[in-house]
Amino acid sequence: MTEGIHFGVSALDSSHFARQFVLADGALQNVGFLSTASVATSASNMEPLMMTIPEFLLEVSIVVMAVVSLVTNMSVLLCFIQSSELRSHVPGIFVLNLSFSNILLAFINMPATFFGVAKRGEPFGNLICRMISCVETFLTTNSMLSMAALSLDRWIAVMFPLSYSRKMRYRDAVLMVIYSWLQSFAFSLTQLLMNWGGYNHTYASCTVCLATEGRSLSAAYATFTVLLHCSSFTVSLAVLCFSYLKVLRVAKSHCKRIDVITVQTLVLLVDIHPSVKERCLSEQKKRRQRATKKICIFIGSFVFCFSPYVITRLLELLSSVHIPQYWGIITKCLCYAKASSDPFVYCLLRHQYRKVLIRVIRRFVRKDHYLMSASSWSSTFDTTEDNWIGRTS
Image (tube, rainbow, N blue to C red):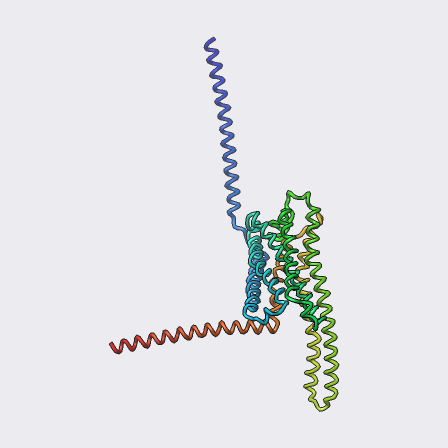
């Protein structure tokens, strides 16, 4: 009986030991499988991501646009600092507001998009990316409204030249800038409170987007997106078209009057040389084309740079539409290109700004030349003094 009990206990111990061995063996196999999988995953993560030619071109384009935008907009600010005449003009307030937005866009949002394209993912943390997306909404809306304000200023100056100083004062311009800031801040704050911002894979940047966990709010997000683009892009485009087309009509009527006077003068001057007549007629043609080119640049640059991005943002609200990533990044780069071209469109190609900028550049070159000549003169004086000391000693 005792031997049977001992035999049963030993059998139970042996079966328990066998079961523990099997469990341990399975655990070792699982650990080995997990370690192998983790090693494979880490190895795959350590593999370098091959950069494609389109990605390289996009990264180079973003860097070039950021550098050009910073240099040109800083040049505009430098012209305002150096010229009291430019500061006295009322449109300068709108130009300063536009340059301020473009500088911040080139300093904050363009690098974020560059790192998003380079890393193929979220460039920063979620909180920082949300803040950057709100900044982008504010700056883009403020830029569009500033362009609309500039077009309104030109319309008032052309349509009411005698009463322009009463209709557009510094106080009125400041109130328009304050309204632009309030509208931009309202949309940015709404985006921040509703958590409608972060990294968007389609555009490889921190911008306005709907989070995955917030699909139940898709109707509210769609309403916000439509209101954002209608109140910024659509309204600004309508103001630009209305103002500049009115300006173009007035400019063409003035050109017709000048052409009539020129033709009458040429008819009266019988003994004038034919080359002079041809030159006057070519100047007439250039005068007619100059106003049309300027208006086309003002409206065309706005439409070309902003409309692809706005149309894409509205189309992506439809669930059946898929936006390719390369197209999304290209539309974002077109928006950045507007920040680089604004200083040339509105400022640097005008005679007043060019005169001030050339004067500033000459001043710096003259100062550098003076410093170089002074240093060379001092080195020459030191050399001659050493030689004189050596001869006397």
